[in-house]
Image 1: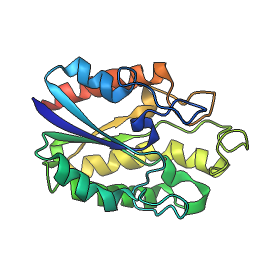
Image 2: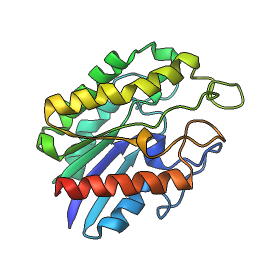
Image 3: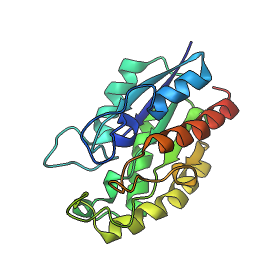
Image 4: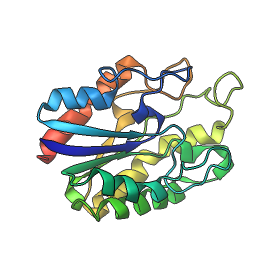
Length: 206
Protein backbone atom coordinates (compact mmCIF):
# COMPACT_ATOMS: atom_id res chain seq x y z
CA UNK A 1 0.00 0.00 0.00
CA UNK A 2 1.40 3.38 -1.05
CA UNK A 3 0.79 6.53 0.99
CA UNK A 4 0.15 9.93 -0.60
CA UNK A 5 -0.51 13.03 1.47
CA UNK A 6 -3.11 15.49 0.12
CA UNK A 7 -2.42 18.87 1.76
CA UNK A 8 -4.86 21.64 1.01
CA UNK A 9 -7.73 23.87 2.08
CA UNK A 10 -11.53 23.61 1.99
CA UNK A 11 -11.55 22.15 -1.52
CA UNK A 12 -9.42 19.29 -0.21
CA UNK A 13 -11.53 19.03 2.96
CA UNK A 14 -14.60 18.80 0.73
CA UNK A 15 -16.78 21.74 1.76
CA UNK A 16 -20.22 21.61 0.17
CA UNK A 17 -20.72 24.93 -1.68
CA UNK A 18 -22.79 27.47 0.18
CA UNK A 19 -22.76 25.49 3.44
CA UNK A 20 -20.46 24.54 6.30
CA UNK A 21 -21.03 20.86 5.65
CA UNK A 22 -18.64 18.31 4.15
CA UNK A 23 -19.11 15.94 1.26
CA UNK A 24 -18.79 12.27 2.24
CA UNK A 25 -15.58 10.45 1.42
CA UNK A 26 -16.92 8.83 -1.71
CA UNK A 27 -17.69 12.27 -3.20
CA UNK A 28 -14.51 14.14 -2.27
CA UNK A 29 -11.77 14.15 -4.90
CA UNK A 30 -9.39 12.60 -2.38
CA UNK A 31 -11.67 9.63 -1.83
CA UNK A 32 -12.29 9.25 -5.53
CA UNK A 33 -8.56 9.24 -6.30
CA UNK A 34 -7.98 6.59 -3.65
CA UNK A 35 -10.70 4.40 -5.13
CA UNK A 36 -9.39 4.85 -8.65
CA UNK A 37 -5.78 4.02 -7.74
CA UNK A 38 -6.73 0.99 -5.68
CA UNK A 39 -3.44 0.20 -3.93
CA UNK A 40 -2.92 3.71 -2.59
CA UNK A 41 -4.01 5.43 0.60
CA UNK A 42 -4.73 9.14 0.25
CA UNK A 43 -4.04 10.80 3.58
CA UNK A 44 -6.50 13.69 3.68
CA UNK A 45 -5.19 16.89 5.23
CA UNK A 46 -7.61 19.58 4.11
CA UNK A 47 -8.44 22.52 6.37
CA UNK A 48 -10.88 25.34 5.65
CA UNK A 49 -9.12 28.69 5.42
CA UNK A 50 -5.62 27.24 5.15
CA UNK A 51 -3.00 29.46 3.50
CA UNK A 52 0.60 28.88 2.49
CA UNK A 53 2.32 31.29 4.89
CA UNK A 54 -0.26 33.83 6.02
CA UNK A 55 -1.63 33.96 9.55
CA UNK A 56 -5.40 34.28 9.90
CA UNK A 57 -5.99 36.52 12.91
CA UNK A 58 -9.57 35.30 13.23
CA UNK A 59 -8.95 31.56 12.85
CA UNK A 60 -5.65 30.23 14.23
CA UNK A 61 -3.54 27.38 12.83
CA UNK A 62 -4.32 28.15 9.19
CA UNK A 63 -0.71 28.94 8.28
CA UNK A 64 0.21 25.89 6.23
CA UNK A 65 3.98 26.15 6.47
CA UNK A 66 3.79 25.97 10.28
CA UNK A 67 1.58 22.88 10.53
CA UNK A 68 3.05 21.04 7.54
CA UNK A 69 6.19 19.73 9.32
CA UNK A 70 4.05 18.09 12.03
CA UNK A 71 1.68 16.58 9.47
CA UNK A 72 4.54 15.27 7.34
CA UNK A 73 6.22 13.63 10.32
CA UNK A 74 2.95 12.10 11.49
CA UNK A 75 2.06 10.75 8.04
CA UNK A 76 5.49 9.41 7.09
CA UNK A 77 6.70 7.33 5.40
CA UNK A 78 5.24 8.89 2.28
CA UNK A 79 5.47 7.91 -1.37
CA UNK A 80 4.21 11.26 -2.65
CA UNK A 81 2.54 14.53 -1.72
CA UNK A 82 -0.18 16.56 -3.43
CA UNK A 83 -0.32 20.22 -2.43
CA UNK A 84 -3.20 22.45 -3.50
CA UNK A 85 -3.17 25.82 -1.75
CA UNK A 86 -3.49 29.47 -2.76
CA UNK A 87 -7.19 30.29 -2.82
CA UNK A 88 -7.20 31.73 0.70
CA UNK A 89 -3.94 33.58 0.02
CA UNK A 90 -5.97 35.62 -2.48
CA UNK A 91 -8.14 37.17 0.25
CA UNK A 92 -8.09 40.95 0.31
CA UNK A 93 -6.79 40.92 3.89
CA UNK A 94 -3.37 39.60 2.83
CA UNK A 95 -2.76 41.97 -0.11
CA UNK A 96 -0.60 39.27 -1.73
CA UNK A 97 0.13 39.18 -5.45
CA UNK A 98 0.77 35.88 -7.28
CA UNK A 99 4.54 36.30 -6.92
CA UNK A 100 4.29 36.49 -3.13
CA UNK A 101 1.78 33.63 -3.00
CA UNK A 102 4.23 31.60 -5.07
CA UNK A 103 6.98 32.35 -2.55
CA UNK A 104 4.70 31.00 0.16
CA UNK A 105 4.04 27.88 -1.87
CA UNK A 106 7.78 27.32 -2.22
CA UNK A 107 8.27 27.47 1.52
CA UNK A 108 5.74 24.67 1.84
CA UNK A 109 7.43 22.65 -0.90
CA UNK A 110 10.75 23.02 0.88
CA UNK A 111 9.23 21.31 3.91
CA UNK A 112 7.67 18.59 1.77
CA UNK A 113 10.97 17.83 0.04
CA UNK A 114 12.48 16.89 3.40
CA UNK A 115 10.29 13.77 3.16
CA UNK A 116 9.90 13.02 -0.57
CA UNK A 117 11.98 13.75 -3.65
CA UNK A 118 10.96 16.68 -5.90
CA UNK A 119 9.54 14.50 -8.66
CA UNK A 120 7.13 12.92 -6.16
CA UNK A 121 5.55 16.29 -5.34
CA UNK A 122 2.43 17.21 -7.32
CA UNK A 123 1.81 20.96 -7.24
CA UNK A 124 -1.84 21.72 -8.03
CA UNK A 125 -2.84 25.30 -8.68
CA UNK A 126 -6.39 25.88 -7.38
CA UNK A 127 -9.59 26.48 -9.30
CA UNK A 128 -10.43 30.07 -10.17
CA UNK A 129 -12.64 32.08 -7.89
CA UNK A 130 -15.96 32.98 -9.51
CA UNK A 131 -16.59 36.57 -10.54
CA UNK A 132 -19.18 37.16 -7.80
CA UNK A 133 -17.37 35.49 -4.88
CA UNK A 134 -16.84 38.83 -3.11
CA UNK A 135 -20.55 39.63 -2.75
CA UNK A 136 -22.02 39.77 0.80
CA UNK A 137 -24.14 36.69 0.13
CA UNK A 138 -21.02 34.67 -0.72
CA UNK A 139 -17.57 35.40 0.74
CA UNK A 140 -16.72 39.08 1.29
CA UNK A 141 -13.24 38.12 2.55
CA UNK A 142 -12.44 38.28 -1.17
CA UNK A 143 -12.72 41.23 -3.56
CA UNK A 144 -12.61 41.67 -7.31
CA UNK A 145 -8.80 41.74 -7.24
CA UNK A 146 -8.88 38.34 -5.53
CA UNK A 147 -10.64 36.90 -8.56
CA UNK A 148 -7.92 38.22 -10.86
CA UNK A 149 -5.16 36.90 -8.61
CA UNK A 150 -6.70 33.45 -8.52
CA UNK A 151 -6.61 33.31 -12.30
CA UNK A 152 -2.90 34.17 -12.35
CA UNK A 153 -1.75 31.46 -9.95
CA UNK A 154 -1.53 28.65 -12.51
CA UNK A 155 1.27 30.29 -14.49
CA UNK A 156 3.16 31.15 -11.31
CA UNK A 157 2.84 27.64 -9.91
CA UNK A 158 3.77 26.04 -13.21
CA UNK A 159 7.02 27.98 -13.36
CA UNK A 160 7.85 27.05 -9.77
CA UNK A 161 7.20 23.36 -10.37
CA UNK A 162 9.25 23.31 -13.56
CA UNK A 163 12.17 25.05 -11.89
CA UNK A 164 12.14 22.80 -8.84
CA UNK A 165 11.56 19.52 -10.65
CA UNK A 166 8.06 18.97 -9.25
CA UNK A 167 5.04 17.81 -11.22
CA UNK A 168 2.24 20.27 -11.98
CA UNK A 169 -1.49 20.27 -12.64
CA UNK A 170 -3.84 23.24 -12.99
CA UNK A 171 -7.14 22.36 -11.30
CA UNK A 172 -8.74 25.23 -13.21
CA UNK A 173 -8.16 23.35 -16.46
CA UNK A 174 -10.54 20.61 -15.32
CA UNK A 175 -12.96 22.05 -12.77
CA UNK A 176 -14.58 25.31 -11.75
CA UNK A 177 -16.22 26.79 -8.67
CA UNK A 178 -19.90 26.17 -8.05
CA UNK A 179 -22.15 29.09 -8.90
CA UNK A 180 -23.66 28.63 -5.47
CA UNK A 181 -20.68 30.28 -3.76
CA UNK A 182 -18.12 30.91 -6.55
CA UNK A 183 -15.45 29.30 -4.38
CA UNK A 184 -15.90 25.58 -3.89
CA UNK A 185 -16.12 22.44 -5.99
CA UNK A 186 -19.47 20.75 -6.46
CA UNK A 187 -19.82 17.01 -7.01
CA UNK A 188 -19.07 17.31 -10.71
CA UNK A 189 -15.97 19.35 -9.93
CA UNK A 190 -14.68 16.78 -7.47
CA UNK A 191 -15.12 14.03 -10.05
CA UNK A 192 -13.38 15.99 -12.81
CA UNK A 193 -10.46 16.92 -10.57
CA UNK A 194 -10.15 13.35 -9.32
CA UNK A 195 -9.88 12.06 -12.89
CA UNK A 196 -7.13 14.53 -13.72
CA UNK A 197 -5.15 13.92 -10.53
CA UNK A 198 -5.44 10.16 -10.91
CA UNK A 199 -3.99 10.31 -14.41
CA UNK A 200 -1.17 12.54 -13.21
CA UNK A 201 -0.32 10.28 -10.24
CA UNK A 202 -0.26 7.24 -12.52
CA UNK A 203 2.09 9.06 -14.89
CA UNK A 204 4.33 9.98 -11.95
CA UNK A 205 4.57 6.25 -11.10
CA UNK A 206 4.18 6.83 -7.39
